[in-house]
Image (cartoon, rainbow, N blue to C red; front, side, top):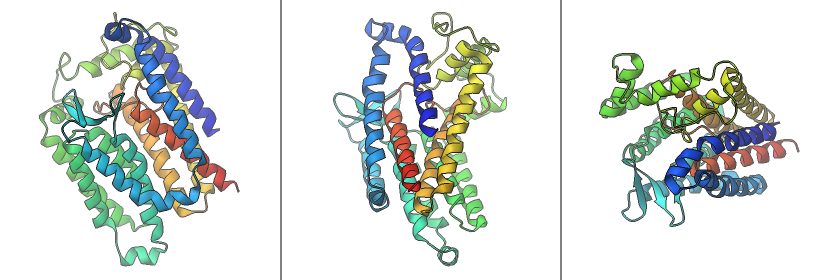
Length: 358
């Protein structure tokens, strides 16, 4: 069932990207299939390959390799700041130049950090041991270090998703609840500092809270997203009806793809998509419940929480339920690195599910 939901979401992505990417592709490369083909060859195909690898990898290797993969991932994130290796686009330095394509290492931290935390917390096998040696301080220090790396990219939206999934793992690790509340409070202070240190982020918060009105500036994407979603009505305008020539929506193939889906399929199609993500999360939790190994159970909880939280944040931003974040919709938005990382997560979930059935 998890695989079926995943395939449905991927098909959703291809279906709506085909129409939404036609005009940007024509402008960029003089042909309507440029972005769709890049999505397939640099996202979906390597993604399916890595899914197969993750599905076949021996379960015993996962826990042993967790710390090394995490440190290696941090090293690659640091490489984005090296001149000649890091790639800057739109004022952000988040990618590594691999000549034929660019890789965003931060997307893979969503996996390796989950593995690292699951291995770390599961090693503290008894509740007594957890009370004797609290981990909330080293946990927060690691969060602080990662936050520093993301602050200078900058990529606070991705950092928020990573920390949110990390907090879910912490919550389910049976540490004293007051530890969780303390760490949560410290992280709120950390993000508040990030907001006030950035005029752009502060303006987004002020706009969301209604203290700022800038519909043709920083509020343009939110306004156009609401207009696009509303134009879909109950059942939508029909597949292929979206046309950028008449809809002034930024990032149509990226973080605004939900608005395109809402216009073409309406409220009914939007609800169906949200139910798919909810069911993906539900099936993941069922896998975690069946898994007797605490490490694997925490890995499953972390991975499905990341996918679900990211989907919630993306859709919520398009509906103006939360401030605009700029993160992709899992399995659907155009991209390479985020698609590959999400496909790896699905391969791992299927692998753990297979292992748990034995």
